[in-house]
Amino acid sequence: MDLQEVYVVRYGHEDVTPVDPAQFAAPLGHFVVGYLDGAPVACGGWRAHDVADGSVRPGDAEIKRMYTADSVRGRGLSRVVLAELESSARAAGRRRMILETGTRQPEAIRLYQTSGYERIDNFGVYRHDPDSLCFAKELLS
Image (cartoon, rainbow, N blue to C red; front, side, top):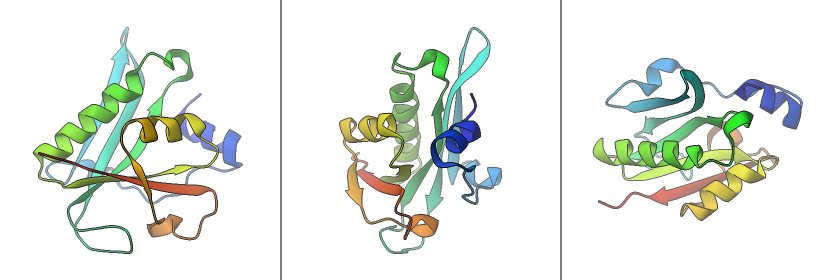
């Protein structure tokens, strides 16, 4: 099952968040894909934010499109991807990671909470979405 199919199963529609692949180009973004036996099984990226908007601060890096294939869940790959995203954002001078996840993604919520992320006010297109939860984590040098 791919990422958009997960959204359809859990929420009844694909994720419609505006995402331009160019936003993940260095130095204002980063995207990683993890492979196992030559097949892509995990991914995630971040994109820079440099304008304050509600709970978004200049210097933030927003995590987007974190995903681990069902066939390899439970092996810690999401933590590997998350650690790489945090490391690359820190190296690019980003001060804080922010993200949105859905209320129907308890495994994602657990991942972020156990990785030091704390709830913040919903931001952007998620500001008034009752199915959205937003989180942030300071990136210490």
